[in-house]
Image (cartoon, rainbow, N blue to C red; front, side, top):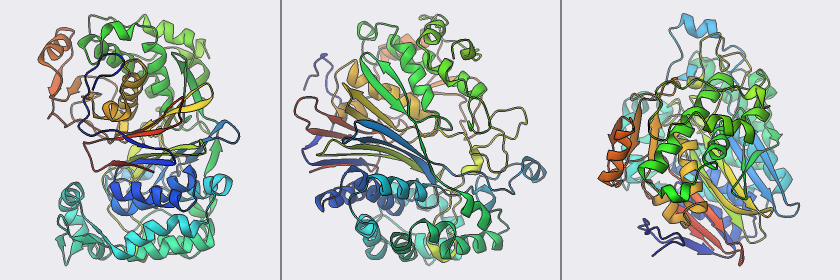
Length: 545
């Protein structure tokens, strides 16, 4: 198969097509949950929430009720986009001084937990846009909890690695082990307590989770393990509606979430790349990849200096998204040499996560990212609630001068960034990926693969992938210099040699060893057919109807 630009197909699966609905997610059972809800009369918003709830069951490494996230929605009735920021803040008792005294923020355990926000985001999105009642929307996830599901190879590997922690705690031991032994591939995993929690949320709304019975159970668990969460932390939290940010890329409008999301980085990257003739450079050549990596470096440097919770920090967003600023930034790129020292620009002068996408026959579209941070979050289930709690506190800085420095009640800087691309005010692409700082780099590749090089969604998510690391031992704590470019082994030797000659330090991964779990839906501009692609590197599948 050839694309319109003559790029040979890299897809080992065909794209999935449908007319009535499409769901792409990180797990086939979650995609089926979304489609099931659509087949019962639900729209893309109902399907997104059903998929979200199901992913918290079948992909517990990445997300769930105990985490947070962002929701980007295109409403066909109004022809407008809206965003939901469902990221929870640091507990009121979480001070910089406390963590410094304790030797830093732990990667696991109860002191790594921030206020869970995603469920309130689901609920306000459903209240405004949903068509079905919540009990029907949550029904597939509840069934997966109660009746169980077979553990995949990927999930079994994660459970095995976490088994020492899981086996040591009675609540995780009951869900993720067989009498202390890790659940193996093909065995059935149940979380019946989580089913009870989802039923209560469906029946009682946000009150039970943030002010009622479940909130009290979470706080009692936190207290028992010397945690920081209080009933006030939960009661005071509310997800909020926000205005998406956007830029125009070659005639397409690309929408992202505003800070505290890092979505502005993708828009800055696109503004810079647009100034170059990417088509003449070629797809996945040393020239085009070098350009994108250098644009990434400039944009990440701005994030490091300027971006944090906008309730606490004045983020110069107008300047960072300015086309004039992009032109100045582009002048800093040497097309023949990789930069090694990349300070932030001056925009003021110009003023383990999961991703899934849904689209329906009425023209609505949703891209959602939700996360409990790293694999299995804190690795703690909050008592008999079945809720696996996040470890989002690990994304804070403890440097008092850093814009992302920890403060009680402040929202941490997030890497999650859902994407919707429109053409002539209609959705054209819905896409995204998990992967921490990799997300905006992968999204840059996805968008250019489709818009510049004519790939279909499955080709775009399956194409060889690169990522620029800020440090070879990349952690959740951002660094300030770039010194490693990872490439999948499918990139040709000639291309790798070209990048090395430009000064990039390379690390070659396995042929399919790249990061992320990219998901994409393309809405055909003429027929409105829904075309889905899901990353073959993980457990994800596109399901169409």
